[in-house]
Length: 230
Image (cartoon, rainbow, N blue to C red; front, side, top):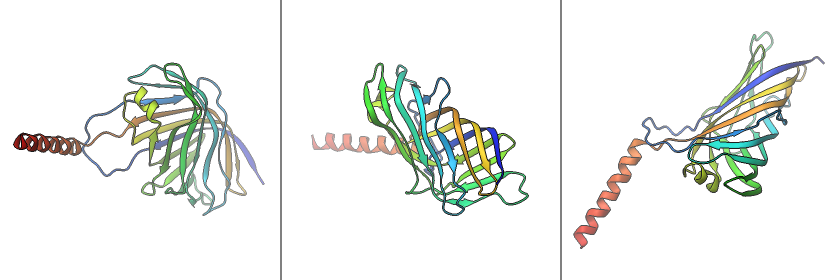
């Protein structure tokens, strides 16, 4: 069994797949951040075809965004689990690459409280979502970089969303996390990394122009009908 310890940067991008090409108004951006050394782990047990990619006990301490004052995130913890492993690195592959599925068995969440202009008690569900089957989660390592790309939909706590502009769901978000150290087991194909820094930037999915036009048209018909009735 051979173990290697490395410093690795993990980049995770989750983009909602709605099949909509036109976009309209955007709501508020919300960012979860940790000011200093973080903690928690991201790992895979090496069980090909069955094992999942898991993030556990990853803390945040601040929430910032447009349309609202910054908040202190009290005891906020990020947790995620993908669907089952689909492929693993092959012998001689110059890039260590894994892919994972999504769907209803996958999950991502942030629980915690807030202090400042918005007071939410500890253990409040601030974010919850799932990975999409349409975009399998890919993990690729080249040198000291490990990148994860996926798609999914998440929903914000309504009070938190209102504090930063009002739109509740759906949102799209991206995560970057620096792991140091990371241990790879080349015998089992597993790896585990301690999270040294993590940021989650979250933007609401744009409202499609077509939907805006449809809504305007419906309101117009309602007004016309009311005038006729009157």
